[in-house]
Image 1: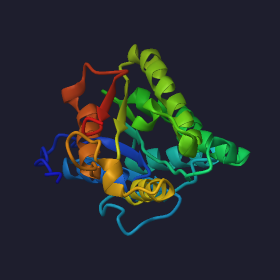
Image 2: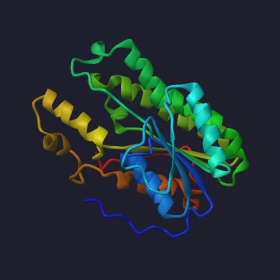
Image 3: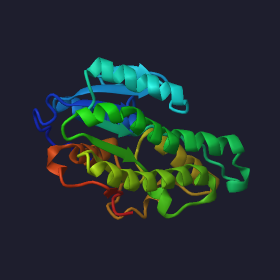
Image 4: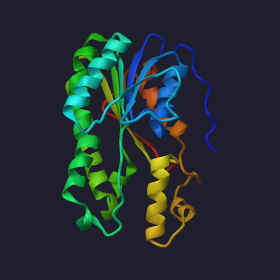
Length: 253
């Protein structure tokens, strides 16, 4: 079981953060840890959830829309008075047990929009504010499914693979401006979306969720806090010489 570390009081004091997909699961855990350590945080998703961290400012946005992303960043910068930290965690995936040929064309496009193009658009929209910040930092959230891509989720992991490549490339481009860009790659994490996907796959192949998780060397699924710990480290001054990195948080899987 995940044991939360103690917050580092004031580590993010005065820092202003935007967390996409910040209303539940991994995103909510990231937003909460930033809040606990002194940051001002804007969270976004298509709809607010009960698990949206109190103390954050919620702005509804559909990240499949370029216009919505521009409006989101404009509002976030206005609310926060600037922007120092950007975390792109938003994601969604449907499982196609019949394999990749069953994935509709629109599903491919939606996955590219949500998981890859949204990152490009977010970074481009946020760059003016990030350039004005001191020690600005961006973290994108990927998946270790990119290492073993398979048909039922091929649209999802293909888009995330593009995100991985983009993150490494933009890190080099922005390093000269002092803006750090990194990637965190989770393994199976116990979130509403992640658990539903795992259970759907398990049912489709006649296995149990426990059987699918048996290959995790550390013996359990991850929890949102496991990922939040890595993300907040990369955002912090403790990681000031880390950029273009891909931190794997998978329990060894």
